Image (cartoon, rainbow, N blue to C red; front, side):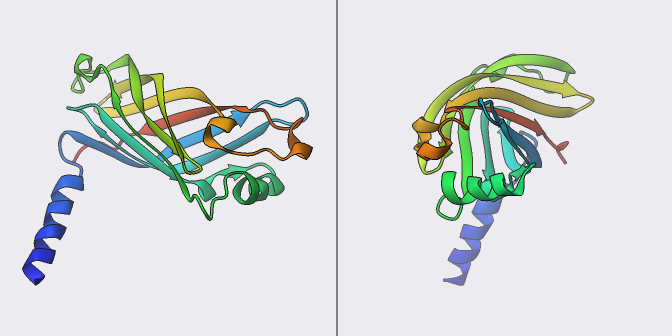
Length: 183
C-alpha cells in the first residue's frame, strides 16, 4: 500500500512540475476596474499562480479572491462578504489554450499577438471566453498579458438595489503574467 501511495505522489510530481516546456509564475498580477457614475472600483492582486505549456499552448491561472486589495478597506470588505462571497467561492481560475501557439518561437525575442480561449470560473460560475493577448519574449523570459471585460450578471454576482447606481455591470479584467526562466 505504501508503494502505491509513493507511486501516486511521484506521478503527480512528474506531471505537475514545470519542465523545459512549462513556464510558471507565483506572482502574476490580476486587476479589475469598474467605472461607475458615482465611484470607480479598482482592485489588484499580485499573487496569481499560472502555468504555460509552450508546446501545447495550454495556459492556466488562479487567484485567491481575498488577495485583492482596494484603496478603501470598506470596499474590500463589501467585495469579499457581499459580492464575491470569498468564504464560499475562495478563488477565480482560468483554464484554456493559446490558439496559435505554433506561431511563437520561445527561443527568440519578440512580441506576439495571440488569441486565447478557455473557461473562466468566478463566483461558482464558469463561462467560455475568447480574448486577444500578447506574449512577449525578451532575454529568455516570457510575459503574457491580456485584458477583457466580463458581465457581473454572467457570473451571478448580485448588486444590491442601493448600490445599482454606484457599480457598473461591466468589469474590465487585466492579467499580467511574468513567467520565471525555466530551470
